[in-house]
Each structure stands twice: as structure tokens, then as C-alpha cells.
Length: 449
Ligand code: FES
Ligand SMILES: [Fe+2]
Image (cartoon, helix red, strand yellow):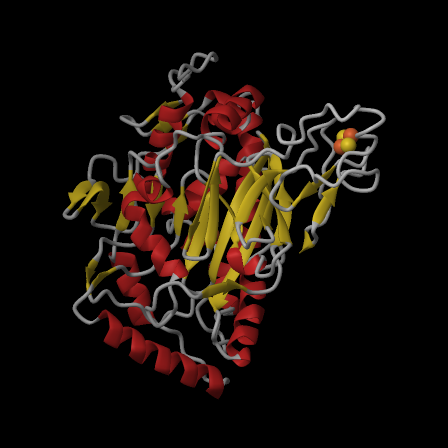
């Protein structure tokens, strides 16, 4: 692995900052990614607030496969592969709901929300013809649904892994945990407390999943060009022509000088600087919504108080390797780039709010989130055009002979005090985050274990 058979050298040469176009279009490379990356990495599956009651379930995906996130009668959470052990049919075909049993639509094998085959004898639940057909010789304990090898809940978010020998989720995150916290903690700095607002927005794009994942890991470079029209339209949270993230000019300037953090051994990266004492986070102004304005004023005061003298981070976009990205502030959202093939991606976007925020705040954010992101959002639709054309161009007979340039800021990354797995740069504009992503990608793709 590593050599491009077209004679273009290696697929990923990070010493020179060169990446072959082939990794974005080749189906063999895609299948290897499923084996060596998606079957070993921690993947985001859903949020606990989506399954609050006993028997609740949410249909999710891991890599190219369907999984069910469930809450069983003992309130335990499970991640189950959505395929019947008899002949493979999907045992759950609803996006979400509540049930005590998943009955396979093919021959009727039935599974509890903990994944086990239902033990009740008889034809309706359990295994039809268990007595007559199977002569009671089918070992029900052996033939339950497949569980993810590992599952961890982190501040309400559920993550799963098919590799039993994988490190813990927190180890996997390393120093990136601080940046994920900026997304998941309450706006007033209190730990956790988020919930999913509304449903999950899902859509398909004819592009390679890596273009999207790397974009969130480092790319503020595209913003002034790609998102210029959204900026002119002024789609910010406070309305009235406000900048799309709601930041004032002063804060925007701060953001762009705050740097970029990359975790080369782990593959994660985020568009903001190192942890600092009393790191600042701004809230937009809401001139037309007094309830919302007052709410965020109070929240900001509590946040300042709580974070006094503490080491914390300025929130910024990021990507957790391999395919979970987030906007931690305005908007506050997570997205998973599910791979469906070398040239097809299914995006799932979750929107978060503080659980105890007033209705007015949730409603304003809901409207802002919709006009910002998702397939109909003014900002995300700009991004999608880029990734779709980049994928198409990577397929071209002539174009594919020419690799991409990933050399911005090459050689300028420096280690970070107190975060041993991190490097940073003194500018926001650097492809260091993309290089961290492809370094990890390359390592795993070369690991044949
Ligand atoms: S495939 Fe599910 S019962 Fe046969
Ligand atoms: Fe963008």
C-alpha cells in the first residue's frame, strides 16, 4: 500500500505535501478504507437524548453499514448491527421509534432491544417453527444480533468501535477532547447538558467523504471565496445581515489569528489555537429578540465566572478522525460523512442546544441552523459544490495524473506545551490539519494486521 500504480509516486507524500487524486475515486482504495479505517476507528453513532425512554431506538450507520442504537428495559444502551442472523434482512427499517422487539420482516426471527433472540416459545415472537422446524435445537444464545465490539458514552454522545483491541475513546481523542468539550458542554461552561434539536438532516452527495472531513479539520482558507455570497446575504444567528457565525469584526479578527491545532498521530484537527487561561468565546448579538439576547447575556456572565483562571479553549470547527466533524459554537452541530463508495457520501447532521434553554432560544437556533447548514442551507450548499466537482475532477483521465498540493505552511508546525500529541501553527491558514488527517489515514491504510 502506498504506491500509486499509475506511476505518480506515493498516494500520500506528506514530506512534500502531495496527495494523489486516486485516493478520492478508486473503489479498491475505498474498500480498503472500510476494512482498515472504519472497522477500527471510533465512530459517532448518536446522542443519548435521541433514546431517552426504555425501548427507544435510533437507526444509525457505521461505515457503510446500518446499526441500531437502543435503550433496553434495564436502561442499558446498545449498538447493534442491523442485519438478521438468519439471512441478513434488516430487522429495523424505521429511522427511530420505540419497541420491545425487532421482528425480521423475512421469516420472523425476533430480537429484544438488547440484541438477544427473544426466548418466548411459539410462532409469533422468538423463532418461528422453533419446535417443529428446528426441533428446539437452535442455540438462541449464539444467534442474537451482532453488538459493536466497544461502545462509550461521552457527555451524551454515543461512540462505537468494531475493534475490541482499540484504545478507550478518551485515549483515541487525546488532546482533541478539549475541543470536543467546547461543542458538548453547556454554553455557560457547565459540563455536558446538550440535547439534539429536532431530527437528523440526511442527504447524499456524489463526492468522496475525505473532501468533507478534511475541510472541517483545517479549512478557513476557502471561506472568503466560497462563502462570500452567504456573508453578503448575512445569514447570522441574530439576523439583520449579521456575519454567518454571528461574530463581530473584532472577534472575527481574533479567530483568524488564533491558529490551528493538529494531532498528527491521531488524525484529528481543529481550526483554533492552543488551550489558554480564560480563553474567550463570544456570543452574537440578537437585536430583534429580547428574550434570546437576555438569555445569552446571562449565559455569558456565568461562563466568564465559571472559567476565571481556568485553562480552556476558544471554540472552533474540527474533525475527529475519520469522519465526524463539528461546528462547536454558532451553529452548534455535528456531522458524520458516511462513505457509500469512493464517489458517494451520505451526510448526517445533528443540531445541538442546551437542554434547559428556553423555547424562544431553541426556536431561533432551529431557524438559524436550517438557513446555515444542511443541503438547503446557504453555507453548506456552497461547500458541497466544491467537493462534488473535486471528486469528478479526480476521476478525469488526464486530470488524475496530476496530484493535489497540500503544502501550505509545511514545516512550520510547533509542539504545544502540555498537549504532547499536538502541534500548532502561528496562523489559521495552514494545511497542517489536512496533513495530520492524511498521516493517520496513510498509517492505517498501511497497517495490514
Ligand atoms: S432473514 Fe430474518 S428471519 Fe430469515
Ligand atoms: Fe465551508
